[in-house]
Image 1: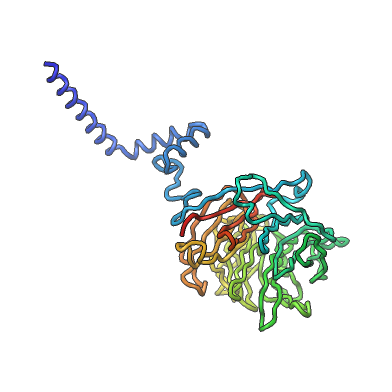
Image 2: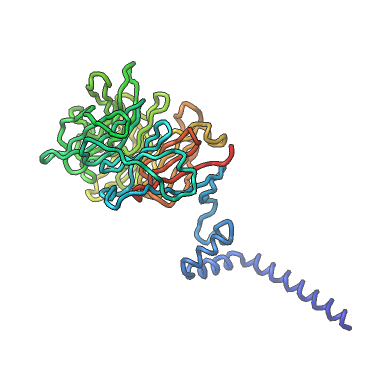
Length: 414
């Protein structure tokens, strides 16, 4: 009798499970909607716990994050990511936000704050367990205004800098031999008066027609109501400028730029990233005498003055961007990553952003770097000003928004 009762209970339980599965299957959409509604009403800490404990960070795609990867996971490669902070004095680098600039020279990393403080630390200090980076503050002989970028060439460091002279903003480049006491001299000073908004300033070494020199980006001076200076050959603004090492003379290399916040030279190919207006951040491959359209053409829209920009660059005599981010990402720097970083990341460029706190991996078709096959978003959860690759320990370092904070990306295997 007891055995019969147990058997009957098992049959009822089994049947109940089958009925429940059938009901859930038939009403899956309603169930998901119910779960979404219930989940959205939970406190944020509880939602976070569910994300973490679920492993996949999605609970019936409650936040519509299907197939979005979160560090240390990317689409094909698992990375480790951690942050290190420079031990700074309270007033050292708080004058300007959005981070500083990074350089790698021999066994050292240099962090350059926007108000001109130079920190030196050992590369191998990135690998220890300490959260704070020991450093040396380098002495300098120059009172910088606002630093826009830095560049190491051989044993010299170059710095682009904005100085105020009377009612003008002046763009200049200083340089010094790399030592613990930096003795800066003027490499190039532009005389044209800038007003209101002087940005750009990204630096790269380049060889043009057999002559070695430096490329520097300059920006449109007016963020939301641009004038025509980016199209005028008499102005340096809204351009990429080439400066000859020996003569210090300069020439316009390309024009029609709004605000190029990234610049990278790879095997004499020039890549630039550029802030658009509302929508329309661009990646460009620069050519000599190329005209990139600003302020005539843009895939973005104006913020306030409601002007209409031409949408086709090519049909209006301008160079088309390689890629456009719509909506904008607050684009910053770009680098071409060496194939040695990982076998699954060949023909790869990395683009950083200030706006959406992410790195974008650009997969190119081949080593001509003319065609982007796809773009992978890698969420960092911090605004990124600068990025460098360190060959010595096969790592990527990021200058994050919080001043004095360096992010480190590594892969454990190839």
